[in-house]
Image (tube, rainbow, N blue to C red):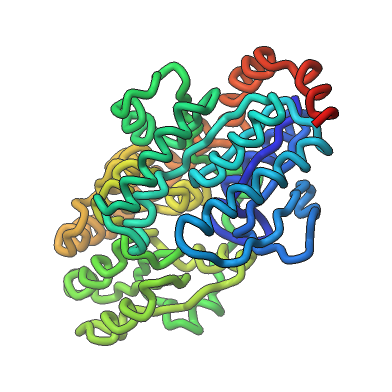
Length: 411
């Protein structure tokens, strides 16, 4: 089986998107499949047209000059589609596998028609909802409605559709999409990357005043939908109940300045520590300082429909997790069993739940082990990647490569 993946961006850039992609590619290669990828103009790879990173082959698309809204996107789609065709002629795949956003699907569909190849479209989040969550879009606006319509059309035109969670699947079915063409490929982790957690770095803890602390933390990107303002607002109540409580925030993003200002104005400002962004290979040192990872996502369409990756990575590392009770978290965490869920958008409820968790330290080790076992059994890429196999095989048999490649040779 030869699969050409079509991506917005990839390694060496670091994001939840690139880490999921890496896990898929590595797991598929481990099954003996031949895999390669094409990234779009937004990778901004400059003069590089092809490269190998971490043993994975990437074809690059040259950046497109900035232009007016809509016109710029159309130019990106056209350039990306041409590059997909070029890469496919060299790689000769059985199947094209496009990953969201919808611009990738639109470029891939043009290429698939030209090549005579089947197309899988994988949705990790609806682009219109991601824009609302990131603060760059408004629900119900003309751009929101247009993007939603394009997404629905792309799904109808794809030969098969993968989604990362049941929330996305249910939304597509409600739009009238045939449930038979949709399958769930849930967020997972590469368990080979998560062995025994490293020992606590006492020197690092001392440098940040955490030696004798009860520490909660968040490691990731600072977007509004992550609800970090709710977490900071909960700190006075948490410190009142647990005087040794410290909050460690590792990362950065659009909300960083506002969050720093909020923390500085807090009556417990001395209990809130910002670390900034850290290199990916140092993240484990910071995980090792945190007793409980807290994910206080706000309630909105994006967070109710989409499952995040970070809680799974924390559970794989045998870390305790507490998260807001939104749809995306409920697909990952069983309250009181593998983690703790609390009411979203409510600092008082967050404080009550997290303080209660610290009062039950004797239950922590068993919960850590249950969480790790859940990830190993149900969210392990070595197992999850098999979900693609029957879909790829069925599509490749419908449009066998022996019939399609002679057409490409004449194009």
